[in-house]
Image 1 (cartoon, rainbow, N blue to C red):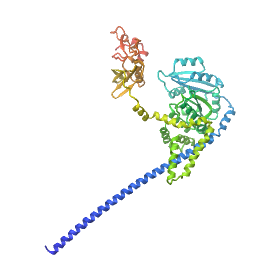
Image 2: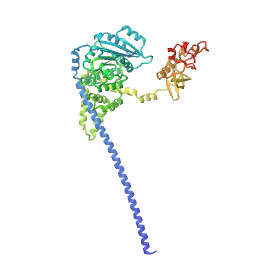
Image 3: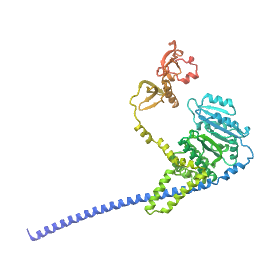
Length: 568
């Protein structure tokens, strides 16, 4: 090998080694760069999360700070309530408004008889008011008593199932809203109690307000711990939260059980919405947006037994959704509208306390836009406001403990309604080791008038009680436990009728007549097929779950003469 060739190979080898060395350095530097980028990215994510948490703390601080000032202002204005009572006491109405009283009673609840007697004793001119009572699925006994007392127009609705307050009142208003010389409609629930001067106070309030919400006082007849807690808190809420809003002429949520609405308001809105508390909240928002404030009146007092009173708190999710839907109207509507919408997203006591404790601990340890003394000062304002509110609300020493127990009572009630609580109860509930159960299954056809569905009807007798289960594929409906199998099957039949369906069994057939056979279940009866089929000469004994091709709906048997019904 020549020297020249040897030098060439040596140089080539050195170049290759240098290239490999440079590649290794490149890869090492590349890996270091990637690692540094990951560290930078991780640091950026941590910084982003810390900034989000910091922003969340700032928003919570502003939120509870505004509510603290609002609460302190509420206590202050509640103590300045003399103007409301003195103006009402010394006001002399120039004339008597014509008032239509609408009283709603469902399922025989409440003492509507005593309420009508009190309406007849009002110190208001009888020529200036009329009373209408809606009996929704009430007994004939109640109706007969009311008709005997007199002084009211009775409207009977519901046949086995209540129609509901919203539909009942709306149905009646369609007939009454066109009455001449009517100034206002006053709504009352049959569970409420009033005094003899209720209508006189309504007349005074009508000269100042378009929509009036009456005060609700609880009657503690049993004296249990929960009833005392609810009674004391209702007293506190009336005299602090509601009364302070009336002093400032701010609206509250309408109460369909005790309210007054002027005729002109109903003519403009053209409806009422009394289905539930969420509907009442939505209806109040509509009224305020239309220019009608719903003002609370401590001069209109109604009373109700605390055991019959329902929860007047709407779901938090619904209130936040309402804010979201109404946000576009904040700058287009009246200031009262925006204030009312924001008022309904006020925090509860647990959120308030946990937020303050968390912010106090955070601001004490870390540097924060709101220093620890600022957070502590606002927390002190909240505590001082609560202490000052006790004498304003008339809360005695013996009642403070019940007031402090109310948040725990409300939390327990919310827990009982949760799915987690029900699942936990079912998990730890001891299972019954022996159940005396008999099950029989028959085929049944369910129809909507055009299509037929092949279903199964399970007849269950369990520990002396009867249940009926209608099954179609993976869907089923179970009746409530009844003493008689006849009533259990009736429950299934009524449920299907509400859905516009019919089950083709003897129980729902117009040709079937039940008979007392000496048994508890009353499952036997007679088929009157002989009246429509000349080939049958006498009634046939059958069972309530039997079926045949001669099925005639019950409604048809009531409307037409069954003797004239013939096969084509």
